Amino acid sequence: MRTNDSLALRYNPDPVVTGLVDMHVHVDHSNVPMVFPAYGVTTVLNMRGDMSHLELRDGIATDARWRSSFYTAADYMEGWLQDFSFTVEFDSVDDLSAAVKRRKSDGYDFLKIYK
Image 1 (cartoon, helix red, strand yellow):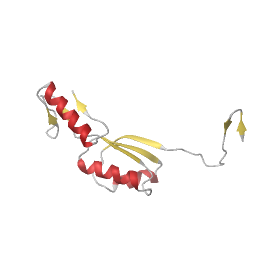
Image 2 (cartoon, one colour):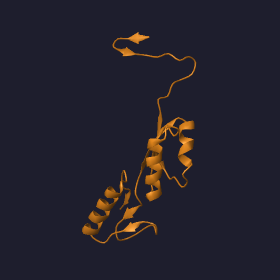
Image 3 (cartoon, one colour):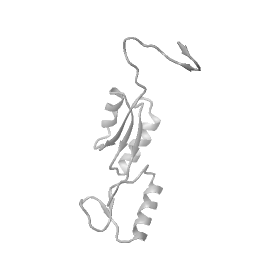
Image 4 (cartoon, one colour):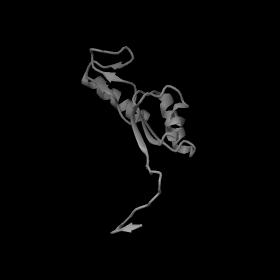
């Protein structure tokens, strides 16, 4: 059915969803992203990554079976008063700048910085 200059598709009785986005996941196994498309999730944002997540992201991008977009943060970063033992600590602006450049060079999609 055409209304004005737009096209409206009618699929009765089932609703049509173009794709859901999960903006906060922690992927701890390479098979986890396979679950998302089954529930209509087409974009996933992994909040704590390492090099294995970069490999996973690249594999998802080239394998049509996944049917999802996968983005990943680098490891957690925070200032000199750490709240978590697994974060990367930096003591100066120069240390922070070098850490950010290194993660960009590694190919991470974004950073998760505390404090």
